[in-house]
Image (cartoon, rainbow, N blue to C red):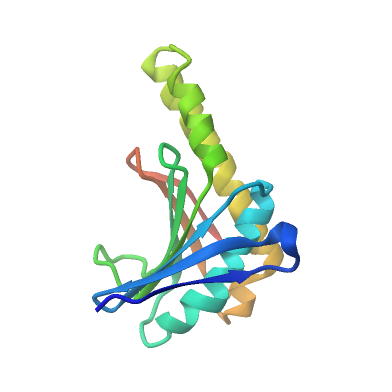
Amino acid sequence: MKASGSFQVGVNASQMMRWDRSQRSGHTALTGHVEHQDLADALDELWRTFLGEVVPLQAPVEWDAVLVDIRMDSGQLVMIPNRTGTKHRIDRALCQIILPGIQQKWECLAGAGQPQEQFDTAVSDEEKRIALTLLKVGQRLGVGRLLGKPNLKMICISGDAEGTLLEAIL
């Protein structure tokens, strides 16, 4: 069974993005489409959607981390409830945003004609910048406190590389 719909969240029109909701096999995916937002504003809205839409759907399943997959080549940031120490997905819902500016940055880096090592370093640096901005926004919102999870971790990975970009307490 598949259900879908659109909704908007945000404080004012400049902070709103269009969100699509889809369901498949008991999982809900929320996708935000960013057009002209500042990165920090878009990440604020991502956190608010995660808190308001994803967390309630995750309630029956224990989790202690937010896994964030940054995929610069497609401009995606995927946010998934996770349990540290497990390799199996435990999420019932996720949210993601598509940021054309991040994808454009990746395309500029890819088209710069630099050696692979320099390209990889530049992409990694940009992914770390995005991860740090997401962490700062989450900490400013008090995500761990709001959820009653004082040791809630945010773990950022890259869809294009192995290892962890950033792991920190929210």
